[in-house]
Amino acid sequence: MWTIISFCCLVFVGVQGEPGPELWRLEASTHHRIVRDLEDSGDVDVWGHSQDHAQVLVEPEAKSRVTRALEEAGISHLVEVEDVLGLVEEQRAQRRKRSTRSKRAAQALDWNSYHDMNDIESFINWVNVTGGDFVQVIPAAVTEEGRQVLVVHVSDPTVPEPKKKIWIEGGIHAREWISPAVTTYILYQLVTEWRDMLQVTDWYIVPVANPDGYQYTFSDNNRARMWRKNRRNNHARNGRCKGVDLNRNWNLKWGVGASSDPCSETYKGPVPFSEPETDGLQKVMTSIGDMDLFITFHSFGQTILYPWGWTNNAPANAKQLNHLAKKFADKVKDTSGGKIDYKIGGSGPLYGLASGATDDWAYGRLGVPFSYTIELPDEGRHGFLLPENRISSTVIETAAGVQCMVSYLANFGSCARRKTRTRQPIVTPRQQNYTPGQLSFAPRQENLNPREQNFTPREQNFTPREHNLTPRQLSFISRQNHALFRG
Ligand code: 0X9
Ligand code: ZN
Image (tube, rainbow, N blue to C red; front, top):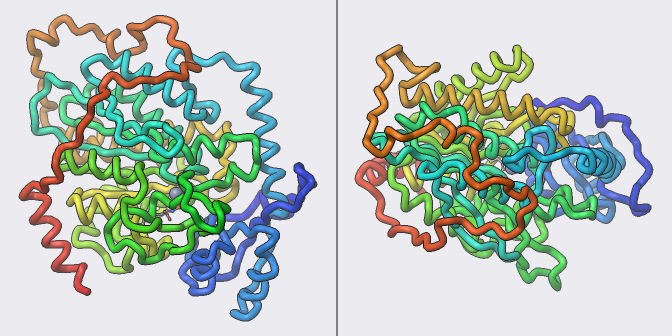
């Protein structure tokens, strides 16, 4: 359950002199029909999910409509934050102060502050240069505003298959800033500290799946900080409403628990994969072949969700999904000294029905046996506005949890199922001249400009392979289909 502590009773004077949105707590869960209808029509933007409450953002012009609908349904509400834009402005002012003081590290990123797309692209460039043969940057798509959606493949090319394939995605929802902080940190760990794991694993990291939306949340307009979708013109209501919810746009049971209204925050788009981001990513994912683990990072809620999101039915391997999720949760709890305690469960039962999301698609269409949405901290006290002083602990704890999950899955390293002899690295002639500096903090290119704007990935001519499903994927999917896709 998310808790309400600090927001309650905070009243700020409207910074921009206009009435802004309010954050309300409704005495009804997000499963309630009224809450879903209000979300579908774009009258509320759901922030927090729980079994008995919903936390929603209400714009001034929708206040009377929402109040009426709630009254008619006998649902009471409480205003938690009267001036949300005031909170946004407060954090922006702190960031402004800090950015004039701080000197960015060589890798163009740190995990004490939030970074915009320019910083993240510079960081990916640094990873690409530093990682040498271990890193390949795959441009999966070009967005409406001309940004690339980048997939960073980290793999030791000298280690033969079989290796576990892991896909980690972040930043599909623009305002969930802690998510790209986590994905970039995991990427950083992979090219610095986690080299051992490349003996048994191959990683695909998407630091920011929605770069236009994410960059938009850094714009001067405080309202933009709340943006969730991408930024494509959806030609609705004279251009008044932009964007598609990229986590409602994937083609598995597309449309269930998603909105058809282009003005809604959960707009599913005109057709599945209508957006360059989702279409590009699904093509790369399909081209990779058997994947073992899929994780998409979101916020907030401190919850690990597994399929399905489109139905409340449990999937075939729910027990195993739960078991592996627990590895993550236990490790995070341990690393945080007991402070961070994740809930675990099916998406539908815990967050309400929502289809067209990446986790269901990876599981149901690609046949990835372990597929998760991890809703990062906190539980609702700060929500999307997680303060910068929470970043470093969150990324460290989350990375430890992921490492434990992967170690368990690959039966290698600290969380291995049973202590077997670790696989000996196979030293090839190419590898013999390897110096640790190649992967740890010795960028081959000196003086990388952290603000470098013209990022050009080395791998420009990426052409996704055909969408051929492997026998394993086909048999997995047909088993799932038999059990769960009837009707
Ligand atoms: O609604 C979502 O897209 C995710 N929650 S969030 O608050 N970050 O927006 C949860 C997605 C869970 N997965 C599925 N519903 N399949
Ligand atoms: Zn999200």
